[in-house]
Length: 524
Image (tube, rainbow, N blue to C red; front, side, top):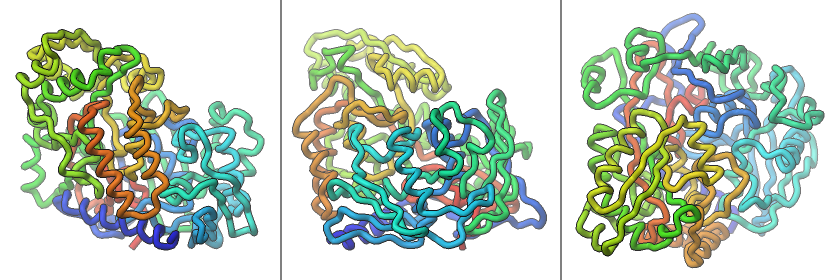
């Protein structure tokens, strides 16, 4: 049963990737690399995403990615699913309670010391006391790992309290830290010495300038794994990414809009990829602050009064698709196409409000895109009798407000929509947790016992088809209840010059090629 589950996890990831490849104009083959000789320097758009350790990077994708250049995990997210990384192989016991990983030979930390199973055990034990920014090791604030044992220098055995459908990915994606450095660190948030950025990964951190949002990474010549294709990877501050790309200051941009896209599509000097729709915007209700939002009819009125197709056309310039009311996007393997849809209908919205008027505060980020979304939401909702007062803040301030519940409505844009379907539980049915992620933690003031129970059942269901049926039902229930309102999923364009570097690759569940460290390695 459990070996079958393991195969299912990998095959589902494979199927998801096969769906993704259809979203790109041109998908580079694995192992494609630079076309020129000599040291290769890749420059990308900068920005401060924190010091790249598991404890100090910012919680969004760009911060996690930079940390992962330095720190490896037992498994890695490849183009077609999880692949062996620090672990050479793994086994699952017949009862689904024991996971045994065998480590690769000759793995060394970037300071030259060997990595052993004791480092893996230490990492998980340390995280249990000092949770990292991306903490995958708890469910509703409770650890699901019963014990971690290093049975010899190359073997690590995990015991879990109950069989779970999500164990492999959660354990496998956890970053391993060196025991000899971190065992004496009592406060990891304050530990930003150079040795804090020592991992087993393919790149060394050489420079970090918080004020400028600049990073410099150099290839680790003694990296145990695939040879780095890039010698130096730099993140540099730019004011206009497209202009910086055209001037050669950066080597890839994802800021191309559809009106200038033909310039690049019609030139042999460029290659264009279209991202899968695993990044999106959603409107989150805080029913603790505004109890009237507990009325399903009011929430459905919001859904009918918002023209999502207009948002796609006027804000995303058609480089997006309207989001499903069931949350999982169209490109997700377990997307349910039969959920209730809310086509723009002001009359229906007014009927549901039944003469009631609302005045609600909306918090957005301060990007041009979010400000424009806020403007359009204000206009359309006003026509249904809902007055929207819009305020904006920078991303960090807005994310902090989300974590504290300091909002009535909030517009939140983030990635992660392509992950395991358990994200429905963490987004809709989980308790408010200590996670630093702005994309999890349930809906404040909302609870639905049927939804909670279905989310619990899918977590423990090991039969893939039965679990899929549960996930389909969860999407139907979410679409009917509208505890929050997904708006649209972006499918933006990435442009680069293949003559310099043509190794860009997607992860099977992620929207951004620059976030995949396999892009920078010879994995052919």
